Image 1 (cartoon, rainbow, N blue to C red):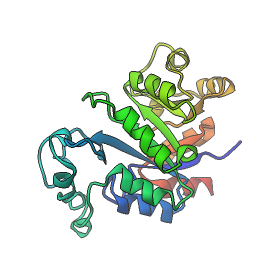
Image 2: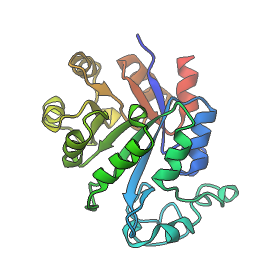
Image 3: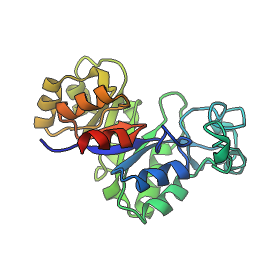
Length: 241
């Protein structure tokens, strides 16, 4: 059985402030094969890396990401919520991440956060930036908004893309086919070994999320998933060794 690749969820979120450069750099340091991050649009149309629609949970600010300029967003402290020692961590732009990523061999799963707020042309903007940095072979796109996945298939067929889903779909493979997805990113609790193997035989790549407990990590390894997305990459490596 092939060993799964290990992707650090929002960087090494277990020990570092999520979706910050220091969390991504830690992922590279500990040997993760890839990272997962989330993208929104700022008020002035910049692609910024943050999970929530608001800055409240992960910074010292309040309000919607979409109502702040990139300068306002980058003036916030995005680290102290994890630990005061990370007070210098900022919300990165996707461009900043790409400048760093292009010096590494890491894969990057970009989740487009289009399921709550409609960000005009965010798909086109992300694709243009990927192409500007010639990173197509290091990227996979995903979204809970499957319309975004369909659009990405249309405008960037060369870049892998996946449907995210947190609740059971009647037929995930049929949905993936309709959306022209190349992968499935389910909540790991929705998977069975039989389904993983059935879908893999049809060419789909499995990157379930977010697997943190040892027993769940071991189960996903046993199921033969292609990628494990986790807040604690070191735990996964422990089991794989």
